[in-house]
Amino acid sequence: MPSTSPSTTAATAPVRPGQVAPEPATTSPHAYDAGLLLLRLALGLTMAAHGSQKLFGWFGGGGIDGTGQFFTMSGYPAGDAMAVVAGLTETLGGLALAAGLLTPLAAAAIVGTMVNAIAVTWGGGFFAPKGSEYELLLTAGAAALALTGPGRYAVDRFLPVLRSHRLAYGASAVVVGLVTAGVILLLRK
Image 1 (cartoon, rainbow, N blue to C red):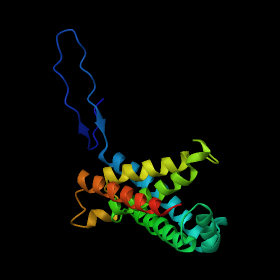
Image 2: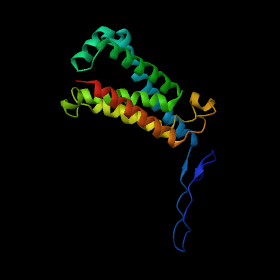
Image 3: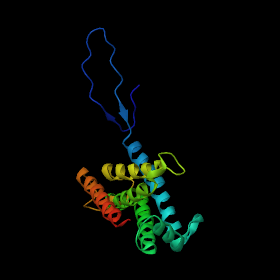
Image 4: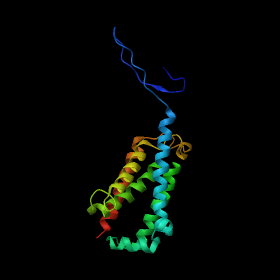
């Protein structure tokens, strides 16, 4: 039975005699946007929580001192400075992603940070707790949001330049995140 709500209908092939006409495919345009909102909130708030662990020691985190020591042990120079950079990137990038504010750049910040996290956990196999499955999933989610855009329920909708998301914005942002991650990894011993 056809839906009376607003929907998008896919084109159907002509029906030959003796065939039953297929039901038209319908999707709610709001379902797509609600799904993107849920993904942005889950990913963005998770990253913001991780950043606050690094910056403030919240949620059982090490704060700048503890995180700085971890970065130093992991081969990064100036561990405390790297802790501040990672903490700010995760916190601000996560909050911006959750709000849908400058989504391609927020996603790029998370991609860059998570590529470095993958490099640190890479030798531990794939599965948690020592593997990199979690970091890989966060990276893929952020890259996907950069490429698709934030959806209709986002602050970007009110910014003229980002109102109509372009694949080129997202792809460029992912490249920026990867290049930045590569530069930071070159500093690692």
